[in-house]
Image (cartoon, rainbow, N blue to C red; front, top):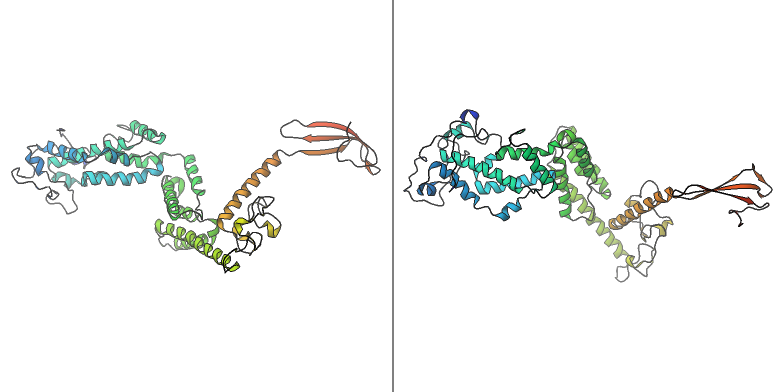
Length: 460
């Protein structure tokens, strides 16, 4: 049996004016211990309160066991805690990462409501769980129940933090440093939850810029499954909410980041959605919910995949409607299919870059690779998105190799130290300069013969 002496109500639970009115003992609302106990007994509510007032499980069974008011409230919480196993606690674990805070808050709060009922809901949902009227009308055992529930939830919150992770350990230390000072977290579940949820507000501007950069690099691939697309939309919002509003601006910026998840092949859909949102905002109309816009983005990508696959199928069937070899869209041969083609571009090593037709590889040219719609097969239609992604990788590799070659190039320079050309070739003493990034410049002086041009100096 666990008993806790009740002296006064903590200011967290009720108006300070009533904080000293808790230690009054008395009968349990006139409940008769001799009356039969029913497990299905309705939840009790203090008289005179509205239907939405505080509710508690019936204490008849505990009263029948001869417990006093303080013991009833304490044992009621202990009975609720016994329903919570180790597995349930591990499933509520919190890594301490900012991105996971909102999801953890939802899971943890829901579980606490299932275990402790209305007191848990109130303790985790507001700055003042109970009004002055509600607290004044509560019997002693109910007040004890609220206080013990508060302590139990506070302890469970600490247990769920994964201290073996770097972020979880850092969060635990922050809580330790702010207990009984700073925010005065103390043993209040409400204050501890508030501290955890507001921890992201402590990040610096530089940290916020890093997260924003991560968001800017997020983009849906046409090869992603619908589940992966939904996961990315959810991850985007989690990252956005982990940044203080002062560093990220209003929520319209979140909508802009969301529509930028469109892949390049869906650029037209992205622009149309952007115009629609901008127009509604300019006219003072409310924007659709985030989930609605996310569904629109996902639908645009899925529709592109369906339409594009249908086009490719129709083109393939048009080559050989009767079956058999459908023909190669890389080189145009009727003797083999695309995947059997042996043609390979000498620059990128791919057979579908269009160089068979244009005689020039698009990879490594200009400032960036040409858009998907400009790289076409033998039939004059854009290559599939999967193949275009492979070209993007080849283009990236070629550009990186080009930068490396430019940095380590070898140049050969000849200078006429005697002042010019004579006859039909160079005459005189010539100095050849060989430059290399890894070695110091070397100079070799050679005597060129008269009457002919030599690209390299003769042997000694």
